[in-house]
Length: 320
Image 1 (cartoon, rainbow, N blue to C red):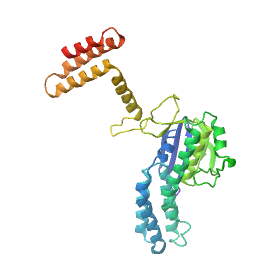
Image 2: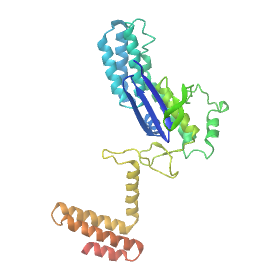
Image 3: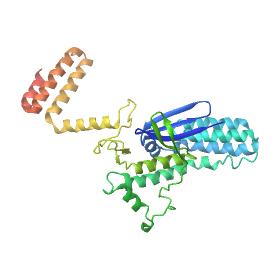
Image 4: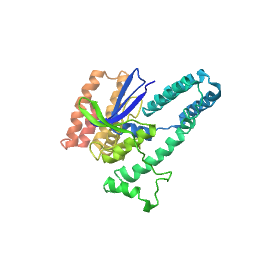
């Protein structure tokens, strides 16, 4: 199986191209999105899946049962839908399993190292802690107001008793990179990962090289990249089943706060909800309600501008 998987950045987006020799898939995300998704991924609900693959590999060594191979492939397919980085894991192991099958599963302990699968949840969890520490010290907009390069040098300075062997410090590794044409308009660096950790490493160093600042969203409490307005407080992550984003929820929160702090808005909102409920009970038609709402908004703006007193506005809301 001629599996392929490459990663690159172009025009502010991250691209993933991968395939099994027959079909190639290309996915794109906003820059840093996949990294933030892996940073906050709860891997532990999938630990049973990893353990099951490990047990099947352990039994595959002596039994050479092709049914076990199919079960492992099914679990790899399930995992690949969790995050785009796990597509690499799926293709990597499909290739390994095919090689093992071709050689009759002889001497496959090195070819099919089951601990690389069973230990992945723990390794990823450790890396998440390392990245969170790095973000807090270096890339958080609220960290010391110094150049990112200086903060990186300080963070990895051995004189501060912070060693690369420290389990809480993220360690960069050599990456297999190419410099090539990726489309008709772009010639750029391309990563050909040897593990999913290489993909994480690649995007971490790109965030640092590009000096991207991050902020913790005031709604979901997760880091997001400040690629636009530096004072943005809410991210664009979908928050609920309706597809509303944190930014939209933040705007709603600000509106509710403004209503609470502004008597005219509070009075308008109360009257609006009251009359809207009348539609359900047949006390007002939809047409009459929307006609009233349009006039109420005009009166509300007059009150906010000072052209109508609050008392006059309240009387109008109660009597119309």
